[in-house]
Image (cartoon, rainbow, N blue to C red; front, side, top):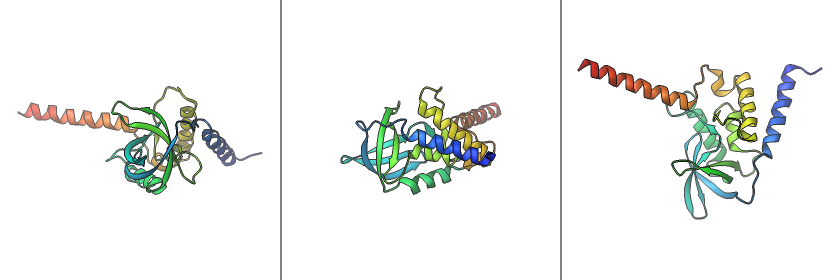
Length: 181
């Protein structure tokens, strides 16, 4: 009979191995070199003689001012800065920033999922549209259950909720200042 810990490890390994093959489309993939890491989930990649911003598809790292922001930034730099990467573009967002899957040369798996596994990123809400998203949600759940990274210090507030709370605090301060006038 397997222990609970062994079962978690086996599930984790199965999810990780399964996620390797979910989103491979070599015809659209290209290679480049990471020349800057602006945030845990935002890289600058030099490819084909030009530099471009690239957001890690499907994940969101803590924002500046949030707990674990510096750790996510450090981990992304450690894993990718000045290294060759293979990028599989997924889409361009409303700001024209390419969102893609990033595989660091010589490393197994995507940088995107590694940050989720290390508890340094949330899986963005996706409404279970993609198999990849569902698999990464399972990894996020394992990180939560294991109290890894940002899940070690509850409450872990997702960046989109944290930004909304920050905006509300600013609005409240502005309203309070207007009442004093």
